[in-house]
Each structure stands twice: as C-alpha cells, then as structure tokens.
Image (cartoon, rainbow over all chains, first blue to last red; front, top):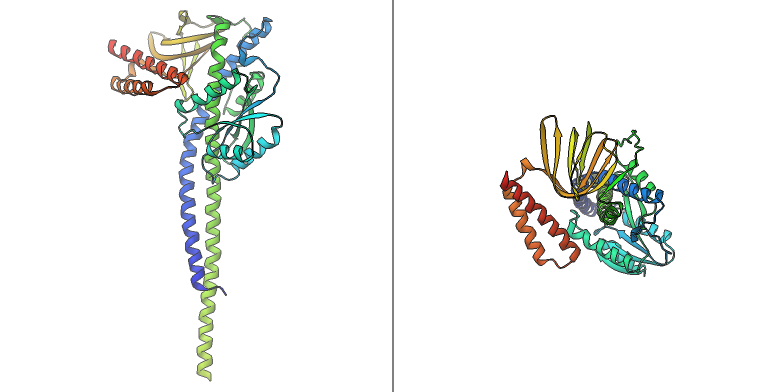
Length: 296
Length: 131
C-alpha cells in the first residue's frame, strides 16, 4: 500500500496543475471569443472583394484581352512561396503538429518558406527547409504587423524568388475542428473556388437571385480598377487568414486545456480513493494490532 | 429602392435601404438610383451621402471600392463614419499618434498606409470644423 504522505503530495500537485490549466482555459475562451468575432466579421468583406475581382477578370476574359497585372499571370512554378501561420506558444493540442505534417506531406519540390509565429520558424529550421523570413504577429493583427509581411511576399514574388504565394494555416471550422489547409493566393487563377469557399463559411449567406444581365461598367476604367484591386485583395487575404488562424489557435488551446482540467479532476478523484483506502487500511491494521496485543 | 451595404474588414458598418446613394469616385461624385447599370468603381476619400425621402445621412469614407449590381450597392472601405457623430478631441489625438508613427516609420509601404490614414483624419477634422 502506498505511503499516505506520498499520495497526499501527489493530490496536491495534481490540484495545482489543474488550477493552472483551468486558468489557461478561461483566458483562451475569452480570447477565442474575440478572435472568432474578428475572423467572422471579415468574411463578408472578403466575399465582396473576391466577387469584384472575379467580375473584373471575367470581363477581361469575355472581351478577349489579356490581363496585364502580374498577380494574374501564372508562370512555370520552380519555387513555391509558402507562408506558414503558426502559434507563438504551445499547449494548443495537435494544432501546430497537424499543420506541419500537412505541409511536409503536401509540398514536394522546391519551396521558400515564410512564417508567422515562433513554432513555425522552429519547425522550418528544424526540418532543414528554406526559411526566408520569420514574422511575429500579436493577437490584434495590427496594420503595422501584417503590411511588412505582404510587402516581403510581393517583393519576392515580383523579383522571381518565388512563383506562387500560398498560405498554410489551420482553417477555423468550429471550436472543436480546425483543419490545416494550404490556400493558394497568387497567382489569382481560380476565384470561383474562393467564392464557393467563402459562401459556405458565411452564416446565413443568401445568394442574390436577381440576375444582372446588363453589361457592367467600370469607372474610371477596367485597367485602373485592376491595377488597384489585386494588391488590396492580397493584403486583405493575408490579414484575414491570420485572424482565422488566431481563432483556431485559441479554440484549440481552450479545448486542450479543458481536457487537461477534466483529466486532472479525474486523477484527483482516483488518488483520493487510493488515499482513503490506504488510510482505512492503516486504521484496520492498528486496531488489529491493539486487539492482538490485548488478547495476548 | 436600393440596398446599401458598407463593409469594412472589421465589421458591416451600414446595411440599409436607400432611395439614392452618392459615391465619391475618382471622376467626381456619382449618384446611384434604382435600376442603375451594374458598376464597379474606385472611390476616393470623401463623403458618401445616403438619401431617403427627405432625409440625408452623410458618411465620411476613407476610399475603397464600390459595386452596384441589381439594385444593391456594396461599398468596401477601411472606415466609414457618420459625419454628425464625429468627435473632434478623439480625431485630434489620433492625428497626433499617427504623426508620431509616421516620423519614426522607415518602411515605405507602411508609411503610405499611415499617411493615408492621417489624411483621412485630417479630412474628418476639417468636416468637424465646418459643421
């Protein structure tokens, strides 16, 4: 039978751990609410933006003219540019490791990596992959934090260091499910898929049934619109996906910490039972000894 | 009737019915009425007006894009504020903060963003001063 004092010590330490995990659970759940709201709020903007871009590029296609903007021109892919959105801290369940495994499995061939979050930078270095630059972004996702990222990505894309811009991030589906995905951003090829994805994400989305058959006008000119929309699109997509990954991070951390807290409670119960048994055994033992002594 | 939606990356600012919407575009102001032809336009920083039988609501917008499609006007902008609700002391402190940020910022792209934000607040300031 285990020593009474040892059991008592273990109960105490498990309770301490439970206190920490419970505090972390509460903190992440309030942060989760905030980041989730921010991620959800950006989706309608994303949709309208993608829709506009689609309309402009469609009108170029139907008129048979070539789109001059470099963001639209696919070129032979020699080196992919991949931005990994990870977390700064651990204790968020398998969120990061799932993401990294997906990256390792789905990227073959040459790629240049950019990372957000300390865990991503560590992963890229450890795996011996080509890390171009590591960024850190706070929870607020301030303009001053994501614009340098976009600037670096565009520079590398324009000077030919990378031929695509893709973002690997844990897609926020709901609190319990975050699915790691690689979202291609540049070149802009398949806006229909982007639109479909966004539609399924926006709650209560209603499609405009009233179809517009008249030809669309652009002011000042289609070229003028097209020179400005894509960079806005890129900038917004990067910030939006960072927000989504933050929402995923806090959900994952909250769930992980909740199960850790539950686990600790279970452990405390089991240990308390052991403790009581041991105590009872000791008492019985003592009584037996006294009885044996008085009988002798 | 038109449906007007002003959306920023952070929130849906306005969702309302309107009789007429006047957008500040690069080529001047464009009035949108019902049955307007589909249009995508680049907006500059300025005043967006919403008219509804006899009443007018005026927003100051920081530029962006607008799409008119099947009597629905979707405006994408970084920020839109009702002019009647502007607060001069708040604007003042924002301007000062931005000026400090611009002075110490080296990155060109970021500086451009700050400068356009500063211009937006300066426009608000002048609007408050005139109202």
